[in-house]
Image (cartoon, rainbow, N blue to C red; front, top):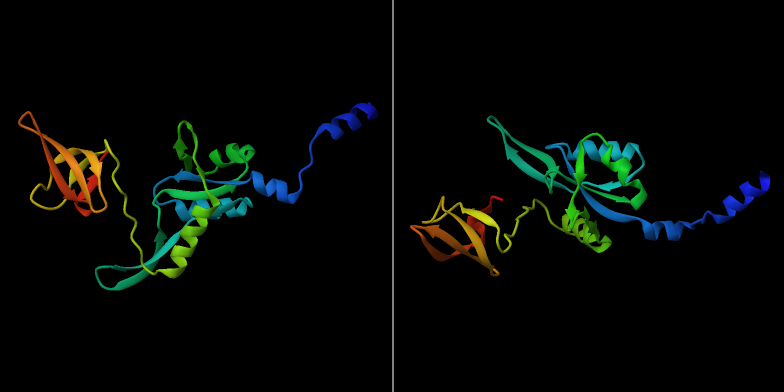
Length: 184
């Protein structure tokens, strides 16, 4: 019996701290709405490395202005884990699921997390803007075409080309990126 135990233990690979660190990757997880800070706290108590980027902004209440911290990415928290820890993450209160890419949890590059951290250190109140992608269904939120729905056919540096089905025709309009909201 002792011989079997020794043989089994010899077959289990032992990893150095550096090797283990290489297997750790950043993933984005969806949280329940307005649970980002709570999820971050829960993960921290479980000793799971996580990052919830926060933005300090001034908000107006009915009777005063107040400075508050709010998540940069609504309903997202980043976690740095090994693949084996994914089940633990999914079972964490407040986490809905991993952000998926091609049916698997999307891996976020270490460099991208570092860039987010550096950007937030250098800049004060920031605003997150989503860029529409080709084939996104969008609604125009400002301008003479306000309220119209369309499909993105081309994305430029500052404009988006949309197909606006109307009267059985496909009208193509170039619209400023800031005047478009993704609805799909």
